[in-house]
Image (tube, rainbow over all chains, first blue to last red):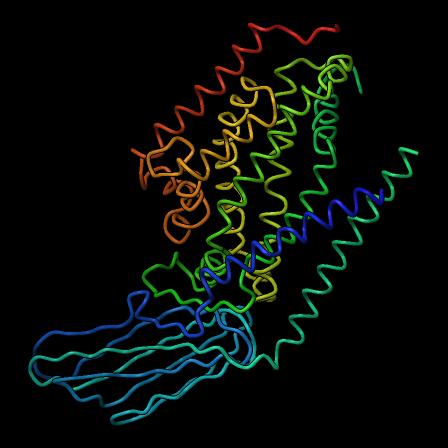
Length: 174
Length: 256
């Protein structure tokens, strides 16, 4: 029994450097751009008011911040509307603004998947090009205590179950 | 062991799961997969990749994010090691005599090993994915229609394991010695691992675990790259047929 436990432990410990190697070879990004997944680009030519409506989903964690940025040429942004919904709990935030906007930054109060719906109205003047960029930055890890606790509970429960089962089998064999 | 019937079959499956404490290795693998996933990974998908509703899209994003570049290799190694224990070491340690004394034939054992390997392979992998998903977004467990993606993921990974199992087991049956079998399999995994090679584990695993998910489901898995998948599925089927014929030719294990 003790031998098996030590074998299991040593195997797990041997695998840990492998994981650190993986994180070293492909480190997780500190920031994420929407344009890596297509982004929002609107271009064409014409005159008059036009609307761009785009929705995307983002997985972010506590204290992560989403920055929005609009780059335009050949047109003038008249208004924007941004609706952010935490998909699984239904909590929603709305931002609206007129004129050339400085779009708000959004800091997540809870982790999870957010649906972000952005509507931009603009006045086209000839050949126009409008690009909306969303950038997600990782936040401080102050709010992660609950998540670490969750991990610890899952780990402990699993270890307990495996240990109890091992003890039961050991007892049966003896 | 009961003499006949489905009860004996499931007793056999249970026996194979507890072989050489394979179940304990599965528990260790669960922790390894958990370590592989980045706890604080952020990800974005644009709306055109969605299935139909935001909750389904959320699950597609979560399942797609619970992935690591190292995962295909680790998963395939895990399956190869399971097959090594269930076939090579079983034969080497004389466990097949015990199985024969229990009244189970070789084909029944083959089916039981397939089921046991599926359980051993899938439980840590899907369990770790679900654990990391629920720690990212605990309330996502309430989005019932999104669970379709979790089921889809389990089914596609089971399909991947079912594709690989006959190939690996045919090799194990022919080579017999576990060391030689492992050398051959790991040579394939490390050296000949290319898009055109037979196992091509990483590429197919990506298909099974990721690529088809947000779009069309199980059908997409087969329609995306038929020219790549069909020859491999045919090879897998041939390996299964070969193993059955081999067992027929060699007959049952005899007391010596």
